[in-house]
Amino acid sequence: MTEKLLTVKNRAGIHARPAAIIAQTANKFACEVTLAREDTVVNAKSIMGVITMAAGYNTVLTLKTDGADEVECASAIEALFESRFEEE
Amino acid sequence: MADKKFTVLDLIDLNLPGHDALDLTCIAGRRGLPRAITVPEINRPGLAITGFFDAFAHDRVQLFGRGETAYINKLHDEKRDDTLRQLFSYKIPCCIFSSSRQPTQEFYELAEEACCPILSTPLDTSDFSKRLIRVFTNTFASTKTLHGVLVEVYGVGILLTGHSGVGKSETALELVERGHRLVADDIVEVRCVNGNTVLGRGANTLISHHMEIRGLGIINISKLYGVGAIRDQKEIQLVVRLEEWDQNKVYDRLGVDQQYMDILGVKVPAIDIPVRPGRNLPIIIEAAAMNERLKNMGYNSARDFNQNVLKWIENGVARNSLTDSDDSY
Image (cartoon, rainbow over all chains, first blue to last red; front, side):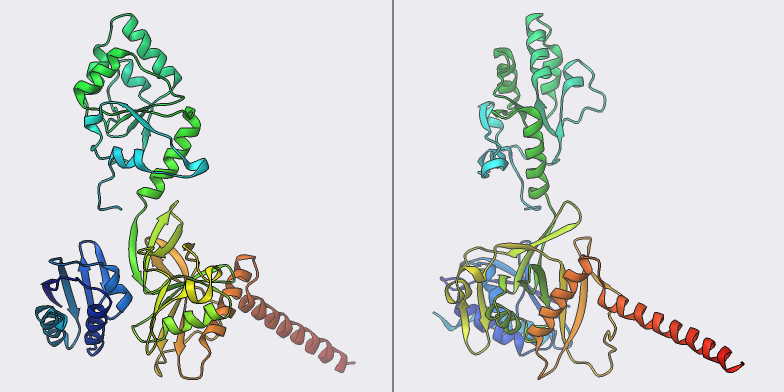
């Protein structure tokens, strides 16, 4: 299991487009991917789930990946957060 | 809800309709309103105000009825308010007076001193306690979020679960198209009420009733199919686990043995349905829903079928033994 703390760095927060990018990226990997904001844990492979977190600017989320390709998956998603979902 | 504090102010702010309304107003001790209610129970402080403080459940909401209020008044008339002082030395979340009864001025002063909120309701004691217990069971119910789609099919609440991309949303969409209702897509917030019922609903009213369909994007079900196609919450009565067809797995072919899935400690009937191109899932789920209703009415197709088979075999044996005996003549 790989765990990472990620901060939302784009001003608009995780709205539909970033959520879609996250879900698409997560779906490329076979491992289980979850994102958590406080006590809400969602499946990162589902767009509606990721949007449900309503994560705004500077929110800290916990990413957990579990499975064969967990390390690659975690770094791919971390890279998305770092690049501000190519929005700004 | 379970992780956040439920304060006395939250209790007053609950704006419940009709027969659930608590109609609480704060009449003293406003500074204590942010106190958290940690034990969702009610205590009648009769014994405590008479001076017996052993096993006094001070962490519960204290409800003063006619008897307690009359006794407080009597204590003040006789200038024996030391037990009340002792009462407020405990950290009480709040005191509630029913039937709009008012305690004495001295009681107010003691409450202000102890920062203990005093609330009043026009309801009578027994009605109010019933309503408050109902509020507590709902508010303090254990909750969790599940990944799946909750639909209502022929009045049966069905939770579709399965891996991402197995076709949960597509199946739900076709069910909606066939006249059934969507409760929540993808994220289902479940609550256990009364210890044996699991209620499911969308995590957020703003975005529930939207679905994400691969290739189509996000669609609004209530706008597309009308208000008749959605529902806010529904008891989960059946779990349908969708999974990719696995050659090596043995799927239930009879349905005689019931499987269950544990949700917040409640055993909910569950079935595994393998997904394969060409299998019409919505129709299978409709059949599962009707079968579940039949079971609840006391008729189990599989068991009844097997009993008929057994009877038939028995009759056959009996008939054979008769014909055998006939032959002996």
